[in-house]
Length: 143
Image 1 (cartoon, helix red, strand yellow):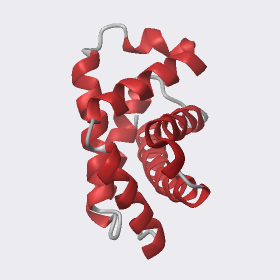
Image 2 (cartoon, helix red, strand yellow):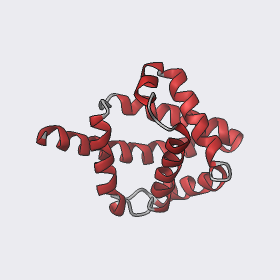
Image 3 (tube, one colour):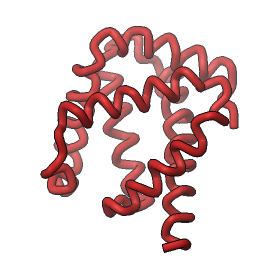
C-alpha cells in the first residue's frame, strides 16, 4: 500500500511544521475530539493523557516516515486496531477521530493548510483507519 508521491510530499511538508510543537498538536486533537464526541471521554478515564498524546504523535510520525511505503506499518496498525476493538472502538468511530484530527491540523497550520493538504491527510488517515479496522475485524472473528 503506497500513497501517491504528491500526497506524501504534502504530508511531509505539513508534518515539518506540526512536529515543531507535537504536544500542542496532540493536546489540540484530544480537546477537539472530546469537544465533538464527549461520549468518548470515559474511555480515557484511566489513561495517562500526556503519555497518550506522545503515543499519538509517535503514531503520526511513523505514518509520515513510511508514507511512501506503508507496508512496514501495516501489521502494527492491524494490531492497534485489534487493541482498539477491545476498548470498544467501532468502525464508525474512526470517522469522528479523522474529522477531529483534520480540524486540529487546520487550526495548527492556519493558512498553509490547503485543500490539497487536507485531502492528502484524509487519504493517509483513510489508509490507516482501513488497516486498523481490518485488524479489528480479524480480532472480532477470532475472539
